[in-house]
Length: 124
Image (tube, rainbow, N blue to C red; front, side, top):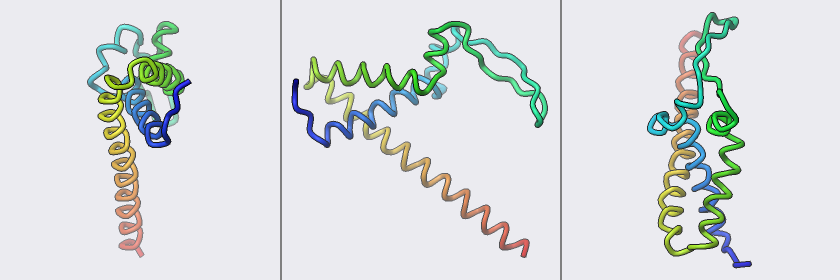
């Protein structure tokens, strides 16, 4: 087995995170998920909501973050072990995008908290 440095390991984690998010949530890959899901209306406390429900096991794989995460980790890790030089370019790009999206989420959530607390302070 090949030794993987801690930096490469972190990059693989971030790349797998970003690839999983791309498959499960991003608008750009909606065309891949669309044939395997159907929209259903569900009644909730807030009213009627439309949700996407998988129509097959493959649809479930494309909508389940944990399932897609396992397969993206297998794909990226396996391909890296077989073709490290070529795969490293993709891992680098996906890991940068993954790190950026984590930072953006953290900043976005904290900006909302600041706005929320400043609104509360104005009410007092």
